[in-house]
Image (cartoon, rainbow, N blue to C red; front, side, top):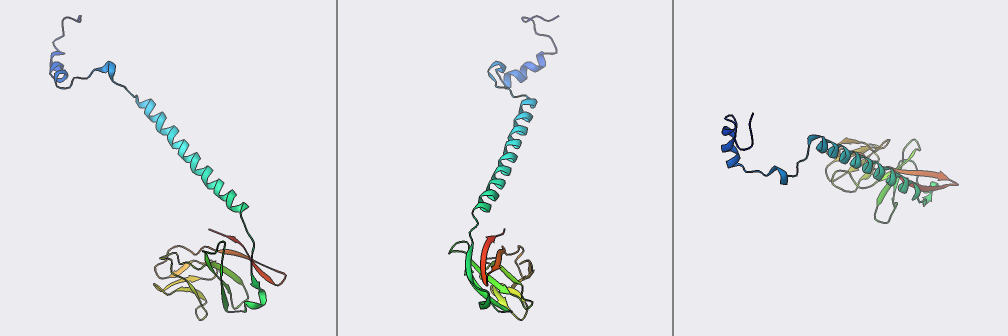
Length: 171
C-alpha cells in the first residue's frame, strides 16, 4: 500500500508529466460533460423559444396594423392594363394589373433580384424586369424567367362599391 511519502514505482513515470504540466486541480474550475450538455440544451431551447416568440409577435403586430388604402375607381383599371400605386407607405412602389379575364392582382414593383422596377407586359401577360430580363407570372408573382429566384410580395386588393382598396401586404 502506498503512503503519501512514498510514491509507487508506476507513478514515477507520471512525475515527468507533472513537472512539465503543473496543474493545481484545486484551483481549476472543472465543468463536467453533464453540465456542458445541460447548458447547451437549455441555451438552444431558449433560442428556439425566442425565435417563435419573435415570429408570432411580428405576425400579430402586422395583422393589427392593416391599413386600407383607396387606390381608385374600378372603372379606371380596364382589362389588360396596369396602375402604379404606393402601399403600405409612400416609399413602397406597387403595381396593380387587371388581366384579360378581368382578374385583379397587385404586387410590389421592386424586383426580388436587384430591386429594379417591374412593369406589366401585355403581350406576354407577365410582369417584366428590364434590368436583367426577369419575368414573373401574374397568378402568384413567381419568377418564370431570368435571374430572380423569389416571388414578388403580393398586395391583397378588395373591390367594393366600384372602388379598389389595398388592404394587406403579404410576405
